[in-house]
Image (cartoon, rainbow, N blue to C red):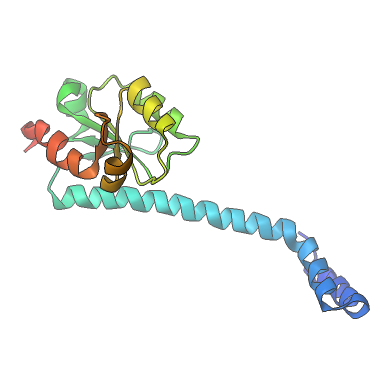
Length: 183
């Protein structure tokens, strides 16, 4: 661990010799690596919390609608199986596999591959990402046959002609009722 008092003493000396601004710059330069690590750490924890919060919001909506689901353990890329794992193991055609990702950055390809490997016809990737690219849609929907679920206005503006891209409203009103055997 660095001794910050030495850095402050050095900055004070520079400040006296070359002015306040030079002293602040000296202090900032010596502390920059630590500030950067701190801010990166805070940023990562905020992103993790944001992703977890998004999952909890989806789960809360399913709870309010009394839609049965099973949460998956963290080592799986799948977040939820609707209605439950036993049903999935017996007949994948009457279940839904849902992965919830706040953003579609680099990791989405790993997620898509793992979801594709489940060989389920009803795989949905929920996202809150507003900057979904055409490349994302092509790879997720066409290459992996996964339904991408996006905000209603994103679907309307960018993907109205794409069948495998669903809005949240379409998922709730069109895809979910196909699974009537759960209720």
